[in-house]
Length: 498
Image 1 (cartoon, helix red, strand yellow):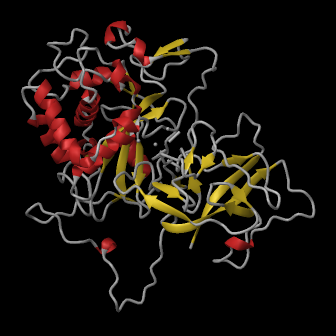
Image 2: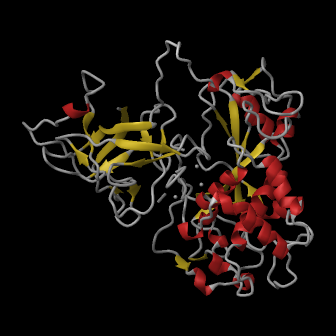
Image 3: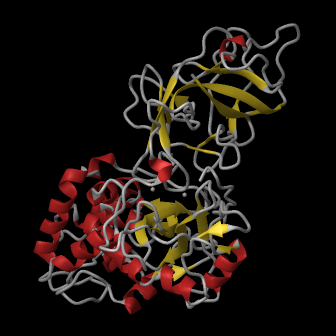
């Protein structure tokens, strides 16, 4: 899958991203895409994304901006097993912001439902290629989801991440390319074509790292295996809380645009050469477009040692086994007490102050007793909670929020949306503050901190800001940034299950 990922993921709350650059706001001009409807106005040779220093003018049809750092993300699902035993599978292609973090769900008008995705791709392939089956057959084998409905994952990845790729904006296409959904085809062609050049299983196997129920690996061994391979650049490994390897993120800059991944017989400005019979790009073309680069601050959450790289659990006939022990449910005779993970179901959102240079007035202690249903004593840093409009309050009753998981795309972390009794919650792109109002039409996507899963994270950051600590009856707005240093109160938002 960035006012958004984490308006979803929302790349990881788990991550502390270091800006690669902060371009001065007065040194560049973003040229509206409506001025460029073909690649004829793009430079030749093309420009690489995330240039430093940034150019004074940026044509977002020619240069992927502001999201120019791309991640090709892959899954290793061992139980239940997905895909061939000797291959990882596709998660997605994610455009991250050059300065760290990421956007998501950037254009809901171009979203597609899972039920339409296969039909849409088939129609696009029929109109652009003489061979329609190569792409969909490959996706059916290597782009899978745990619910056995891969089109759910396909639609989600496009809606969340594909719509944030600036060079795939419909206005960037030449007038002769009238179908606005050609950008959808381009997204899936580039994602699958790039994945075909990144055989993670083989790269690890050539370094002696193979799936095993008994062997354990260090993070350094995994990282060295990829960095010493033909890929030659650092990657980001991800693990489950049990230390099981389950994901890898490759990092790339992109040369030029990601348009025109179909025959050029009618399109003079086509730049990517491939056979009209197949939509999949050859290896040399892929390597001209995707240039490996260092991670944008994304960090592994795997332990330094004792990492499990488990074989895929499949029966001898290749079918999935029954439910694994980790997914069994307790019976009526079970005496275990179920516990819910943080940010599941319903809960309060408690405020913990990290740094405050605008202290509360004397003789006016914060009122926090209303969120003490699960504890007899509050941490000294806890002051109040969020009420249903998304504001910080220290008096009265805390609102109950519902956390709705993003089941299809675990992304940089387990992702979820939040809503109060009024509406979904969003960090407004207009005001910058957290709002949960009836007028809200989109949701922000959140995650939790990987070290403390009770702490809320948004766009890979767990620190939020306010102008001041509320007095007794104040309702104070919460922001995702410090307003260029003008918001003096730094805080965290903690989940308290109810």
